[in-house]
Length: 202
Image (cartoon, rainbow, N blue to C red; front, side, top):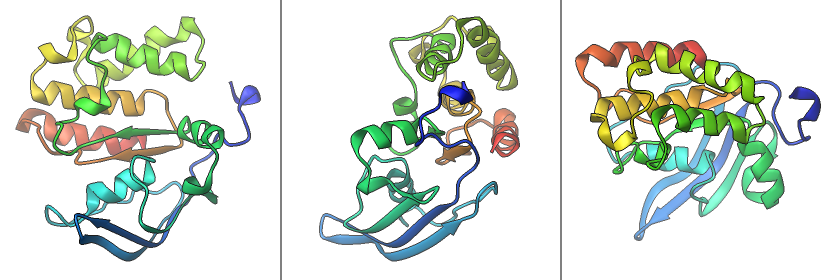
């Protein structure tokens, strides 16, 4: 697939730079002139109390919310100044698991089975059909979801839906992975394993 990649698609882990990010929601400054450099190829953890702006910051990085001021650079490319085509190509280069009030359902497709959620993601990236099933099942096996591969997300308990969202984020082996609230909504049995799997693939 590398030979067919468009120029905007990342081939290696990129540096992420946020410069003077300001975000105002309901007349409240959630972020104010925030500057952050996330080095390429490193695990970076954002910590802070609820409401500090962590999820808002992640929405800026993954292209879901444009900041009121400042720039977001991924691999030197300003994502909010990119054309729709440039952004689509760049977005193919990273995986994301979103948190927030929707309990990670925004990171899965409710109309697809657990397995289809992963194989569809691989198909969209041009992975050959003969590779999709094995790659998807490998990730599901890591996250103890192989035995529910034929079920829909709505039939799963909350902690399994969370693990499915992580599996979708990791299945492409993308050079950049953005994970929101990775340890929220899990039972004790799966919490440590989720964090370790996330770290291993970032």
